[in-house]
Image (cartoon, rainbow, N blue to C red; front, side):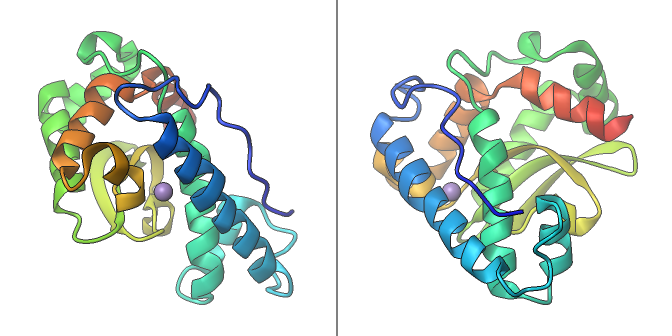
Length: 202
Ligand code: MN3
């Protein structure tokens, strides 16, 4: 396979005022495009050309840093665009039933999950991601540096927030916690998170 940049699943100005068109133009058209372009160059001759994206991410981890960084970021961003939606967020009332039950039993409830997820993002030193992931049938909050994701830690990501500065500096400057709050409360596409949860837990 080769990597391809998909269009955003909404208009560039659809996530305002929480994420601007300018942020999405740079983040999608420049940053994600660069991961796709560089990933394809590094995939060529790597021996992993016939594999799926998830396999490339897992098999390049710890062995081919250049390919891993770009393939990992391609995987992360493919989902990131779908982890957000216009009129997203909305609190526990918007989380589909099975997923909400798991958040209650595994993570101490919606409010605690919200605090723990935002804290993971705020305390990731430097660039990286914070996550909700399924590991061993249970939900966990995680954080990873740079382009890493829960796949390389034996878990399946169902929600991730990009805390690289390119994701928030235009709209929030250095206020990463305010960006995380807007992401959780106003942007998360809980239907898509629930879809990934059903796939990961079945
Ligand atoms: Mn990014």
